[in-house]
Image (tube, rainbow, N blue to C red; front, side, top):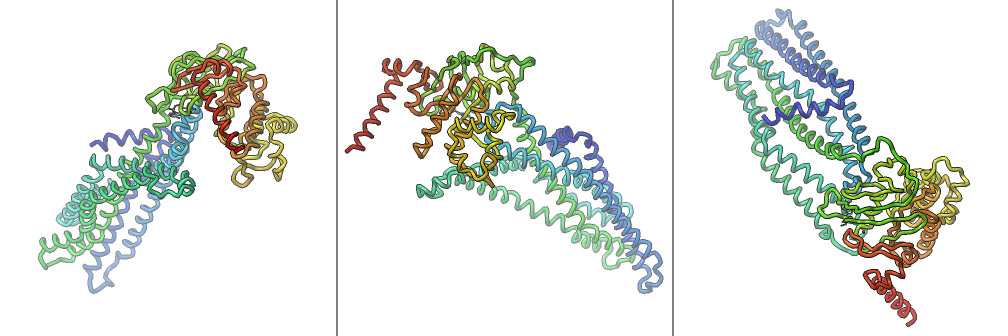
Length: 596
Ligand code: ADP
């Protein structure tokens, strides 16, 4: 019943994406049903041939209709196959169009989502939904749905045959069909099955996710000579999956055996019925009927199997649709009807509170801060204190839950994405270079820049040493198939991009760890060149960099706990003062350690 109620929903949902090919799905179901109906007709002609052979036996020369009936059987078989091919062509055309439109809809929607949403969700999840979940709708629409339509014709054809041939043998055939169908329904139609399929998809998803984590962390495991046991969650997810699959298989075992035996044993019941009805005295006519049912009955197993797989695939599609909805249901970032361009470039956070969608604790809480043009504001504080969140909020990767963020007095929400893009550059630690050349990556900052401007930007970003060692200069490809750059080098190229863009507001995340001091020094110089004369917000990890900032904002648990310049904060002897004291002590330890 539940399955019946959900089916129109599932088809209607998918149909929305079929565009002009919506009718193809229904047409393919009708053609498939016709094909199934026609596929029964050759059996009628075979029966006529059997009947004739048995009647004239052993004087086979008397048989006159054999050739005609044989050709008819062949003709209807060919017709049935042609109809089925036509059905599959239509269903594939609809399925591919639906998959294409679904993918386009997800990608288009994703483009309007807050950029932060992808960090929270994990880009792997989005890829899996676009690729795998959409892919699973294809099999269902292209194959399972037409097969289901075809299979529903079988019971009707069987009922019709009751009247054409021997009704007693027909009834035994239907009894077997009904028994097998009941067993099947108890499996695929049950709530337990639906829950099992959901749990199965969940368990499989867990294993996949943990496997990715495992591969990412393999170098750490090897370096520290840990065992696989150290990936406890991965191990647990595999064990849970294994346990689930074993229980599920046990649950299905009895039912599946009964189903296979019932659906394949029609002929045994037919033989028993035949003996029960006529004893040992079989007329030629009865023998022909009997042979007809023996030849016909294996079709039952084939068709029931198809229905069973189609029902299972239905659950997979329901699950895929709910995953697809998890993206489509996310609120896109609002765009103002009339975007406004601010006059000034003072960035102001006013009582901003923001909680990540899947978190119950604000990452930034009642945060107020003003960043003036031509000044550098440094955010410092322990890991997890909300520094990166302030940075991504300033770039409008998310909208705050409460409070407002303004540039030149205008709320980010009223500025519009295009204007905001022109006002702001950001260089984060997780910079990615896009597939392409060094030149194309820097040009992202300002696509109409000349070669000289690109070279100047690279020079200011301290990239001269990188450019010098590139085999094809600016046209060298980066990433797979090209050169590989170190973390510090990638960051300097990203800074060159921002320098070329020359936007008045710059958001920076100072890199935490570079193996070589040379790289650290160059990145530092590049930052200085980029920051000159701009409104700069910097997540600072080194107290030496912080020292020179115009304003230092100390954060803890999403709140600002101190604010001021370096001398002010050291003089007040608060949290920053203590951090600075510890830093000085560590320096003197190092110096004394080196001199001893
Ligand atoms: P910091 O940059 O100071 O290390 P963050 O701004 O990254 O701190 O994090 C602040 C808080 O928000 C932390 O508790 C962190 O766990 C949480 N957080 C950060 N990013 C996300 C995210 N994408 N989804 C959910 N919670 C997050």
